[in-house]
Amino acid sequence: MKVQQLPSLPVKRLATPPTPGPSKIAPDQVDLASAPRKALGACGALAGLCLGRLGPAAAGGTSGWMLGKALADGLGGSLGVMGGLAGMAAGVYAGYLVEKKTRAGRLAGGLVGGAIGSAAGSLAGALGWQPGATLASETRGFSLNNLPYKLLNPNYTSRHRLTPEEAAPGMALVKPGDVIITSDDEDFQLELMQKLIGASADWTHAALVDEERQSLDIYITSNKPVRNALDFIFTDNHHVSVLRPRYASPESRTKTLDYMRSQFEKITYDHKFDLQSDDAQYCQEYLYKGFQHGAPEIHIPVRKVPLWGRELITSDEFRDCKDMELVWSSGSDFKYNFLSKVT
Image (cartoon, rainbow, N blue to C red; front, side, top):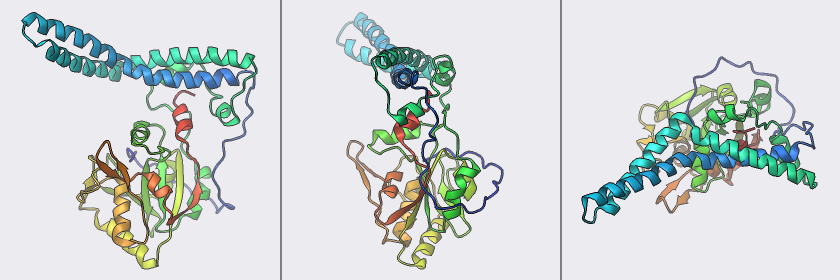
C-alpha cells in the first residue's frame, strides 16, 4: 500500500557495485553528553504526539456527552443516555475535524512530551545512563527548538529517500520476476494501519519486476495497475528490499508476469482489502494472485485478522516467505522510522 507520487526524472544508472548487503546506520559521532536528553526527549515527543492527537476528540466527546445528556434530560423521559451518546458521537467527530485542521493536539502533546522526556533524559544522563548506539544515532537530530515545525507537518521525516548512489547496489542485482517491497516514511498512516493488524509495519508496499526491469504494481491513487521504471520505485521510497522467488521454471515466472499484465484493464484498487474479490486488488493481493496463477510453487502465507474477520496479505508475508530469498535491502525498522517524525 502506497500513495503514488508522480515519477521523477530518469535517474542515471551507475556502474555495477561490489557485493550487496543491508545498509547500516552511518557511524556518525554522537555527543554523549546530550545523547540521553535527545533520546528520551524524542521518545517523549513521539508519545505526546500520539496522545495529543486523541485529545481534541476526547474533549469533544466528553463535552458532547454532557451537553447531549443535559438537553435530553430536559425533554424528560428516558432519553438522557441516547442524547448523551448522540452528543458524544458528534463531539468526537468535531474534535477529529479540529485536530485535522489545526493539528493543535499533536503540537501540544508533542511539546509537552518532548519537554518531559528531555528533562528525564538529562536526569538519567547525570546518573550515568546512556542510550544504545542505534537509538543515540537515530535521535541525534532531536531539538525542542525546531520540534514545533516537525509536529505541525504530518509528512515530516528526518530520513531521506534513497539517492541514486544508495539505490545503485540494489538496482544492479534486480532480475525479472523479483519482488520489491518498500516503505515511505512521509505518509506514516499506512505503517500505523499495518501495526494495528499485527504486522511489523517495516514494509508497506510490494511490486513485481518484469522483463524490461519495470515494476508492475497498483497504487491507491492510480486506482489501477501501473508500470514504473525501476529507478523510480527505488528512489521514490525511504526503504527498499529485493526478494527473489524460487520459481520452478522460467515458464512459471512468465506465467506470473502474464497474469499481472492481463489485469491492467480489468481491476481497480481494492479499498476494502478483501482478498476474496478478484475485480479489485490492493498491491500485495495483486502479487499474491499473480503467484497463485503463474507460480503456485511459491507458497505465500495468508495473515488472519480475527477481530476484523478477514484474511490479508501484507509485505511481511513476502519477506517471510520460505520460497523467496533476500537479495538486497536498505533496511527498515518501524520504531526508528516512527521516531524520524520528531528527530
